[in-house]
Image (cartoon, rainbow, N blue to C red):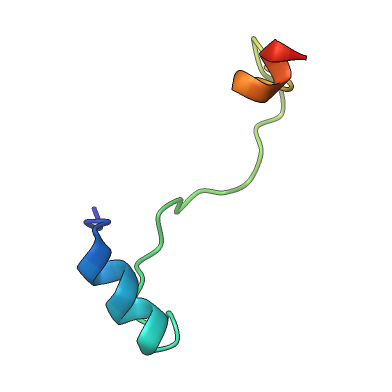
Length: 47
């Protein structure tokens, strides 16, 4: 798992973001889901 800290963000910004490892190796959506959450977050709940 990649460590996300200020140094790694700055280093990857300078080097063109070429050293990042893949975080979601299986990014294909599933055929079905039990629950779908839409619009979650502080701004959505406050409106």
